[in-house]
Amino acid sequence: MGLLRVNWRHIILHILLIMGGIITAFPFLWMIATSLKGPDEVFSLSFSILPRAWNFNNYPQVFEILPFGRFYLNTIIVTVARTIGQVLICAMAGYAFAKLRFPGKNFLFVAVLAIMMLPSQITLIPNYILLKYIHWIDTYQGLIIPSLFSAFGTFLLRQFFMTLPSEIDDAAKLDGCNPLQTFIHIALPLARPGLVAFAVLVVLWSWNDFLWPLIITNSTNMQMLSVGISYFQNPHVTNYALIMAAASLTILPIMIIFIISQRLIIEGITMTGLKM
Amino acid sequence: MPFLPKSKMARQEALWGYALASPLLIGCAVFFYLGMVASFILGFTQWDVLTPPTWYGLGNYFYLFKDHVFRMALWNTTRYALLQVPLSLTIALALALALNQNIRFRNLYRLIYFLPALTMPVAISFVWKWIYAPGYGILNQLLSSLGLPNVRWLDDPHVAMYSIIIMGVWMSIGYAMIIFIAGLQNIPRIYYEAAIVDGANDWQKLSHITVPLLTPTILFNLITSVISSFQMFDFIYVMTSGGPSNSTRTVVYSLWEEGFRFFRMGRATAMGWILFMIILFLTIFQLRTQKRWVYYE
Image (tube, rainbow over all chains, first blue to last red):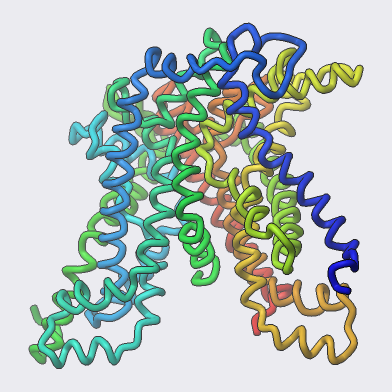
């Protein structure tokens, strides 16, 4: 008679979880609902959650007011470049620190780890000035290159390479592989879950990054989405239907990517919590 | 190169080690270590980028410790961390405990509670600004329909920081929850089986097994949340610009304003060092206390 027995504890739990879930999801629903309203409905005191007259014009209008297409392109270029670069650089260094013997290794590894304690704001101004001297302000290399070096990623991937049994390396060595060949043909494929999980995190951070692109770009054509949308931070723009359309355009792509690759992101974050 | 090992194999391995690590090492040297030295020196100067810097000794630090606006920024940042971190970690832990059980729709709940952690802070700040908007914002419309007076969520200096904290809690629950769930799944089942044999009830299992064995995860979440709450910037930039009357100004907002609006690079880097010292102190402090409350198996 298991089906008929009511589990009151679970029912109360579900009620609480549903209420909390509604509160959690509400800002997103409200964002999408507002983005589909007309300007007069937004500023009406007899509000309704769903739009009374569906208005899809806000979305094309965002692209008319600001070069949002260009913002997308910039964000995608920067995110792809940072992700590939960061994963590669951290994997190479992580492998060297995990598997290869070289003089000074421990000292260098500690020097890299110490960076994790450093808040990025402390190097913000010197890096800005450095980039100004080498004329990298307002360029893709300025957006990409200073963000390629992650102490956190190196540590994470080193931990991952450490778990690979050293017999594999020894076997590769006997077969005449040099360390680079072992890294490329054996270690990288075996570490794929770790690399993918880290890559997903880098995509997320890079897509949402704000302070660095804010200071390193000037011209509208070089903005990423995060800085582009902040143009709406202007007391003269009060059309919230339009702003919500712009917010949806920046938030929804990453959300869709997440829902597709949910398992990977969760794995990535879980790994960071367990390997530290 | 005399410091390299003698055998050919070992020497080759060492050279490859340097080669593979060098892109990272060079990048770290330039963008972190060089930057750190430069910012340390810049902190003792006055510099507007256009004219050569002038030596100012400890002037920036003396100025900042006396400046009541910067002291307010320090206090606001602390206030934000003191409320946001415990609130979001408590809720995240409760959710993790609930969603670690075998209940229906578990994955759907986890997904929904995790979504805020994914969103771009700048974009979602606009959404919250709209929720909090005076008059037409949904919160005030709800209050009006209940016959209650409106609240100036972001315009009242006594309220604004709490409105930001609510949003900060909403945003940081998901990430901590996922880490807590991972920590819970790492607790070996055998402890619970032993507890059931001993006749322990649910509360005893929670307080004698789950929480103690979860303390390393709690410590991890605590340290990372404190660090990120002290670096809060994006919400403030979009929602309040530090106002009203500096009631939501944070350290990083001040740093950005000094550096990139007023071009006082010396003062801005000095702020960066003060922030670093605070974060370093808090992290070391939390690590030191772990002997008293963190259990390792």
